[in-house]
Amino acid sequence: MTDDSTPADKLFDPAEYWPDQPAPGWLTDAERQASLDAILAEHEPGAPIWIFGYGSLLWRPAFQSVEQKLATLIGYHRRFCLVMKRFRGTEECPGLMLALDRGGLCRGMAFRLDAASAETDLKGLWKREMVTGGYRPRWSRLKTAEGPLRAITFVANRGNDRYLKPHSMDYAAEMIARACGPVGSNAEYLHATHEHLLGLGISDRGLAQLDRLVRAKGCVTR
Image 1 (cartoon, one colour):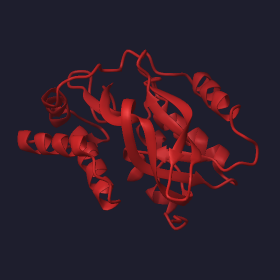
Image 2 (image 1 turned 90 degrees about the horizontal axis):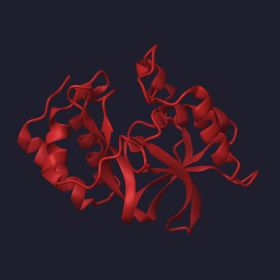
Image 3 (image 1 turned 30 degrees about the vertical axis):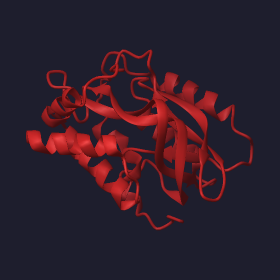
Image 4 (image 1 turned 30 degrees about the horizontal axis):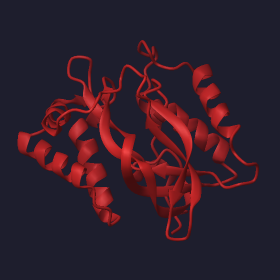
């Protein structure tokens, strides 16, 4: 499946919401670059670079891909486990972000970057995803219908202070239903992800249950 027709103006621009003064605990440009350099040091020169999308990258990408494949990651599952106090939440009313947490499996989409723009795309992706270090980027082996491939994945950093230990579904739904920030509501993020997964033919029972709970609570909007 190719995707070479996505308009550039539809791609997510992190600078649109990037504050002049980063909040305490946010990574510096040097720290983000060091993280990216560490990942690229493990990349085989000349090999394609794939990114595993399981949340907002499915519907608001940080890059323009040239190929897409449905893929499965074994050993991690999709979970709202990172506390969000910016973008779709506030200090007073934080929300939750998706991450890959240990156990189970996760079905999503693998995106192949254009080799000509991969360096620029990765820097943009790191600026978007590696804001606080809540994610831990790593290379993972994905299963696809055409065979295995190696892709960059963003898993939850359990050592980060934003990580929320396993909690009840109702607790998560309450946080998501109330949270809203300059980018939009936390509920919109959940609903859009669930809808795009269904559009890809991907069933996630946990996410479906959470979606129903949040809608039942009556979520806030911008």
